[in-house]
Amino acid sequence: MEIDAIAIDIEARFWNRVNKTSDRECWQWIGNTQHQGYGRMQINRKTVLAHRLAYMLSVGSIPDGNVIDHLCKNKQCVNPKHLEAVTPKTNTIRYQNSRKHISIQD
Ligand SMILES: [Zn+2]
Image (cartoon, rainbow, N blue to C red):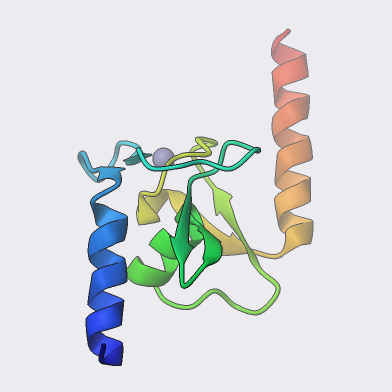
């Protein structure tokens, strides 16, 4: 297959496994998930995380070493508007802050 055809095929396979709703809502991944609960897809025998793929297909390449943070905290959401590329450090700080927030509410 030509490169373009492969890219189109991956994109089609990806969006077939997404329950797209409005821009504001979470787009639920309905394909396979890995042990931590994140969506995943096989591409050329490699496992790619669904939210990372969503970001790459919709926004662009992920800066080296960055992770994709779910602003909505829904692990299976692949709505690009809910995803942000951040450094692992920022991601950890956000996670800790969100936990603090939860414990205050308890
Ligand atoms: Zn979401």
